Image (cartoon, rainbow, N blue to C red; front, side, top):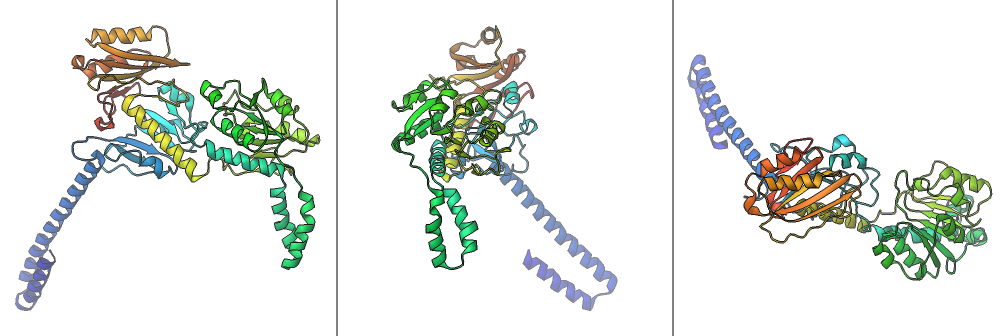
Length: 492
């Protein structure tokens, strides 16, 4: 193209010297039009090629078909995101843009602390995973009504939080924070030379005498993944450990050291403690202000309390009143408190419990694997609003139906009767429920699956059914097809 343009330029220059103005203008115009036409054709070809490349990128390798779109909020650890093969999944939202020409249709959401709004969850979304334990930033009730399972990652950040609890024990038992602050704001301000600073430090250390934690009693409130690890750490540090958890699971009970003495109430466990660590989950209406005035009243005057779970679990107003009545122990909290903020016995940590590279990697990886497993096989594990469900596939040739419905009497019978009327033979099935939601995983003979669209539409016509999904192979290679919800008739 450059050679053609130079040639035209030389030809035009010669014409300026040898031809009348009218002839020159006509010749230049014809040449320019020809050049512009070639440039336009070249630009159109490039645009078509870019569009084709974008479409191929969205589709993945040749023959793989459309990919699942995973919409992310916040900065998700790359260690977790690499679990999504690029040939099967497309990362969107905070992790990438949807290519031009491809519909923005997320099939799963991955997030950390983003306050998720209901209108941010499109009808195509089949699952949401929180990279962490707490899910109070997700509209759980609304997602349950829509039939969308919400996953979390219990235990993935347990070691990180456990280590901060150990740090909190030491911050409570020794005047570490107070001493450091004294050096910065008093000694270094009042003394100018190193010799005088060193002498003043030795003189003033008597103000920050603490206690050893060995031999003291540590009360662990909440004996799940984090609580069990904290209990083990306390024992390793020479502490006497007591615990309280009214809903401890069998697995958690097995993990618990046998030297931990279980208490029957919060009041009882607080009364026995020199140090209390709160490791229970925050559940609105259940554990909100679980540590209230009556529980706090049982504390020894010098008992220290650590809260690395959620600030709302402790009634800050009642706690402040306790301090105003002479309580001496410290309150170490990983969250701000509107009543205790600024109090001399309150040490506020800026929510660092899970803020380690390892914890963020573990949470993201666990969340990604749970999403993939759900999309590929319908398996549900660690959901906060759906029952656990795992039905091993007997034969890859079987076709799997995943049906979500309201937990109402007679619905399972309607579903199985309908499938039978469509000529489908049920090979195996799983029906399980949690509160108002019911989940069905049904494997049928492939030979009877001819009109899957008709079957899905018939299922969706049942009043209690919220969504249906067909899984053909149990691999993400098949892509996001054959998904029906009450909000949209078809996605994928």
